[in-house]
Image (cartoon, rainbow, N blue to C red; front, top):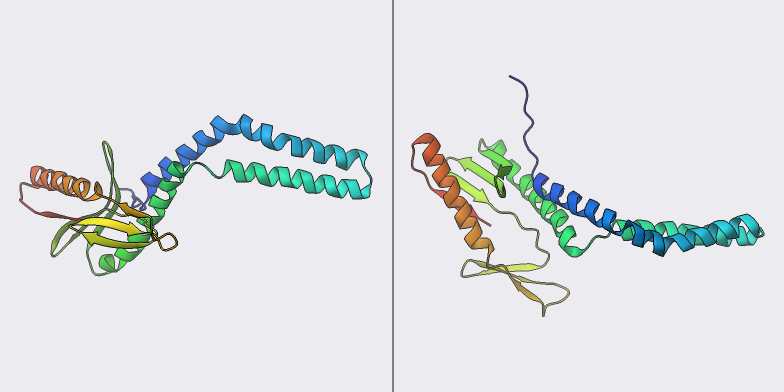
Length: 193
């Protein structure tokens, strides 16, 4: 029996982020070259044919072109970056759950399903818990079980996450059914966001 490494939290979201980033970079590489290429060409030409001062200016221009290239390549649209933020939120939750693991609870991270993943499943003396992690920046309040987000630097922007609760409850019911089917024991799975 070989050693099987425990999956790290956020792996699924991180993988989706990397796929989105690669797609963004591949789709836009010629656009980036068209924007940044002239800086490089002008910088190289100025460096080769000009005086010492012009070579310095050419290096500055070429460096600006390279910096712009990197900035464009590594700044995908927000919908792609949200995956990286989600992975970070899952890793923060993993860190917070270590205390339960030290106390003897079983914690499973990034449990793959046929349609996505469960962020965390925690099993302990008080039952089974499905934990859905979110990495929300701002002040979160709960109203009728629905998370509401207010941004610290833009208090007029208020976001409601009304789909999180039904999905977490549905996933908890699915896990409950799987446990009962596999073990023959009835149990309750509590959904936590």
